[in-house]
Length: 249
Ligand SMILES: [Zn+2]
Image (cartoon, rainbow, N blue to C red; front, top):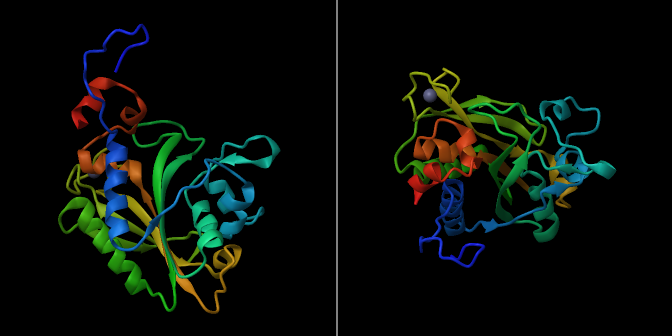
């Protein structure tokens, strides 16, 4: 590439960011299983980000996420889940989709929290989808990501858009379960909230829950890249520091 003054910057080709590398890889994994790759706007309506996902105005779940509000009631999306609703409305049932993308939270920044990070949303809607189907896809996914069997645990988790809902944790690959800064000394990393799609969410997407059901999950793409490449400070990812980025060429 030429620099701003027209001089050569040294003839070095650029390379993909580690999060982009993980995202592209997962897109391939899911496409091979028949999932469409969808995207949605980063500036969302309150309805798509909350209401359509079974999070009404009075619901305490709105406090679980620190939101960057914009003028006229719009917001920077706090998760990729609104793309579920957009996908259902656009494509109907049956549906297999993923939605990778950038999300925003008004967070205090530290080694494991950023105000801007990446998620990958997934959803499958069909007839008589069960938790067994969900687990099959989650296990396939994790095997592909880590190229080995990964130790996981499933805990009940509360998310308004699924019922029942689960937290899928994986054993921390940085410390092998001993405890470190990234896993907050617990040995486990929350990787994947998942569950069966709440009927209200299907309705919001224009799908009849009497006929269809499904599962959904949200993957922390940023956290996954950190685990895959052994990155122990989330702030490095958006630092723009070439000494960091050049390690992933
Ligand atoms: Zn750890």
